[in-house]
Image (cartoon, rainbow, N blue to C red; front, side, top):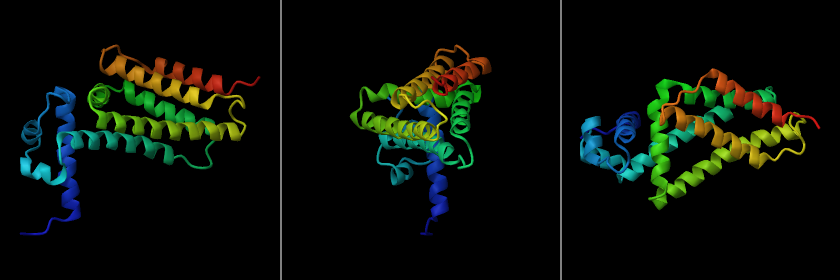
Length: 202
């Protein structure tokens, strides 16, 4: 039997995750079966179990991929950028993402992921770790701004971080789940409210 190359292995994993993502987004976690993923991906059940032990593991792998993309954004900022520029770019990227109709399926997956956390301890643990990582990266950005003197010295970093994450997630919920469309004006107003508050000088 020919040896499977690492590249072929990653391509097969990507194929499984790509189709599983669509199935989870459409049917929900509870109603999705491994057979559904088999039918969607064209990969045999044995082939899927070669890379993933369970439906839960596939679900978490998709969620992890979303976390990696956000982390890449933070690490892409250069040292020459001001903290205000970094935060503006970060917020603009998230807001543009949640109001872009091309991302509806990803938003639906995100909220499906959240809904499962109340019924699955393993996924709940992962979700909390995911939140803590995103929060840690954002708080570090805010603290950098305070240290540089760009943001208020009395800034409550943890509270602002919480407000930013909950606000952007809420826009995603109303847009992707409720069908109440956001627009650039809403995104820009939220961005300006946050920036103006943290840069306010007493």
